[in-house]
Amino acid sequence: MNHNDRIPLPETPRYADAEMLARARTFRDLMALRRTVRNFSDRPVPREVILACLECAGTAPSGANKQPWHFEAVADPALKRRIRLAAEEEERKFYAERAPRDWLDDLEPLGTNADKPFLETAPWLIAVFEQRYGIDVHGDKRKHYYTKESVGLATGLLIAALHQAGLATLTHTPSPMGFLGEILERPAGEKAFLLLVVGHPAAGALVPDIRRKDPAQYIRLRD
Ligand code: IYR
Image (tube, helix red, strand yellow):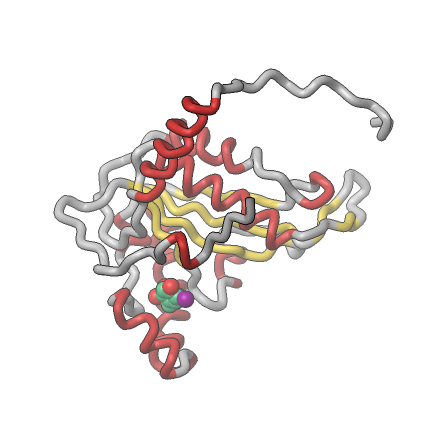
């Protein structure tokens, strides 16, 4: 591709200011209803829904357009079991030895512990991988840029897409996550970024009584 090649910007919808405002607020209000869920139903979720949300994630901007992400969407019960057992092994060490007191204190309101039954109950686990470098057709390494930022952006779009589709998610970061690359047979250049648990909430699911910051605390408009 010649770097001077340019094509017209694809047509995207344009709105009058009033409709723009209404749309912005509607989407904000929808996203404000998102809560991280830890009690999942085993109700299945069609693979096509997961696929469409992952394709949405893949529209994220990325450093030098390298798109340095890979997603493994797992519904296979045997694989989910292996992931649960490996995650719980790391988490037991985290809660018993690795986590400093102040970290455990900060987690206390969330009520988390080393037991992760949702890794088997939820219909889908999406393991997100960061490609720290690429491999070209000759098998040679190719540089990637801002990989964490790029994969973080893609994951944000994924969480928004899943929520918009009516699904619940849990952003899970067992630490360390090396077991994910091993179980899912990912190449050396890929590093597990996080594990997203996806499904419907269990009937009567409870969430911690925690609040978001007042937007005035984190936004300043300087117009
Ligand atoms: N990875 C552990 C601990 C944990 C850490 C943070 I930071 C959280 O926001 C929640 C949990 C776990 O998943 O239990």
